[in-house]
Amino acid sequence: MGLLRLAVLGPPEIFHDGSRLSFALRKAQALLLYLAVQGGLHPRSKLAAFLWPDSEPADARKTLRNALTLLRSLLADPNPATAPDSLPGGQDAHLLIQGELIGLNPQAPLELDLAVVQQAYSAAQRFSTPPSEPQRAALVTQLQQALALVHGPFLDGFWLREETGFDAWHEQQQQQWQVRLQLLFDRLSSWQEATGELMQARATLMRWLAPDARARDARRCDRRLAGVCHPAGAARRGVAGQALGGHGRPGRAHSCYPGAPRRFYGPSVHHGGEPATR
Image (cartoon, rainbow, N blue to C red; front, top):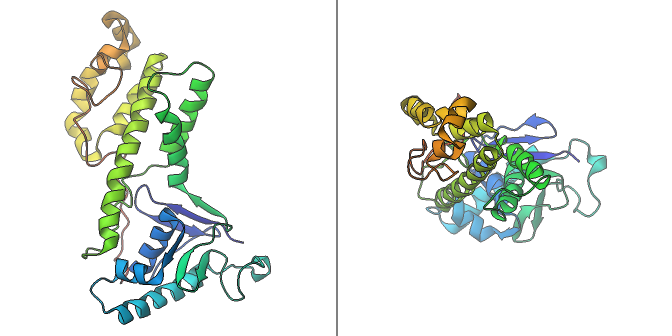
């Protein structure tokens, strides 16, 4: 059974059995992304109205069937002999259709970057101050591994650009994950600073800056973080926390972080080529 791997923190990327998938129907890709992120089973009528709100119900359901046909072909198991016996004959291993309900098979192998980030977020929420060793080291590693998966905001640049439920859901998810990622950067930088990892704390803060604000704010950040960049300077100032406005976390007063950003998490990634048709 081929592994289905989705990266949604940044421009979406979907791989099946090691091959990157391309979609002739943009809304088929949107459907797969929604099913993977939301989990569970969803009524056909809901999905049809979610993606094709301006179509007549019968037309929307017909277009949904076309999208499902495309997904079946893309997600078909390359080796039918490995398909699980629990699924009806002819149905692929990942797409699960039970009458009027549609979803992803929870028994099929799936990797989703959100799952890793959510685990790190849940762990970070439990600590507002640096935990003791060796727990701190393990948590720092967990947060670093999770943030390494972040290449931009949730589904960066992927919009249907219509009055659809999908775009409204996309916007809500993007705001939700922005808050969660902000907390992860906050915790990681403060824990690094508290244990004297000054260069690492600075690198975390610099990555936190919005890509289009880096050129404007780099000098300001360097001035604010002079003590973090240069340990001797930190010693002269007393503690590295003074370079962070005395709060140990960016985003507060006197920090280099320019308020709550709309875009951050490292450089944006843009894919060339024409968008897929609906």
